[in-house]
Length: 361
Image (cartoon, rainbow, N blue to C red; front, side, top):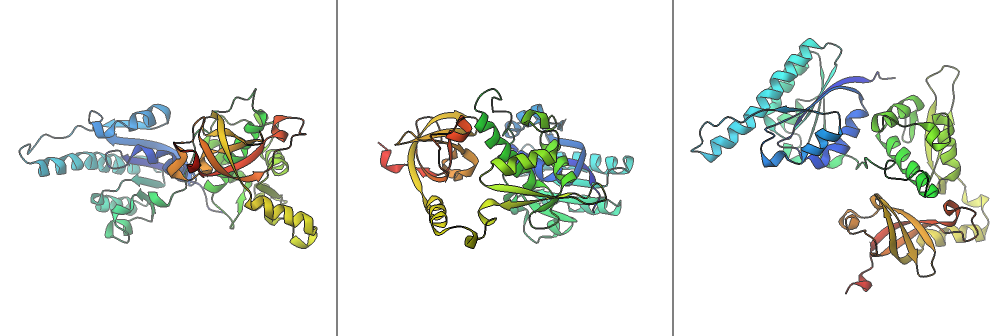
């Protein structure tokens, strides 16, 4: 079992967009504990404004680096000086922190600027594992990318929803609360280092959950442990189940995620059951969004059936248009049950496929 890394993270906030922060942070957290996290920019410049909320809402220290005003008669030279000012600040702090903090064994540089190559080589000579994260404009297979122990392209990172749980009212919409929990745990599972294709150490999954939401409390979801929580989700979820495997030696317990659709062999179902399952997989409905709660919402179809949806499941090009009164085309993943005792049982679930173009004026 690989030991978790102790990480210092340096963001070049002048050439990395703040819109990528959530998925970058989630990926770095999957490696271990972040002990230092800094973002560098001349914060008086307009191109860094998007980082203000990131610094305000996350454990990121903003480092001010004023740009030099040399060569103002040359726009090209001025741009070069601006880039070098931030680069130099990151390089000096990175080397200093590496030397003074031997417990930090990993340096993560988030930048798309190729000027950091010698800095990365210096960190490696100091015995640090150097992780690079940047856009593909960094140059695939370039010398810059090759200097890192590992380099990850932002375009290849999984999307992450930061506020899946906090936007649900725990006193209302009980079914939606459970739906959000399933999405959150699935997201954490995706970000956890795998032992196999769909198997993780239970302890690592627990660490990922706390790294994504440090105040997560199992009791808020009627559970006392991660095992009990996964068992609860396995019973209620229409998508995944989690199989827990225990060993005599503590700390080695694993959780394997399985698609529920693949758990029952076709020959164990009747012909009618299999036919109904196939029809449900292919069933599409048209409906109207009548309620939105953060990135979740409700769709009502022509027969007044009501369904939950998660905006993150919809195509990116329409996600921002999924507002109240929007007409949509959906794939049904769970039929509503009019005889259900609670809203959780009565409501179905859908994935939104597209806007209903036939309703456009």
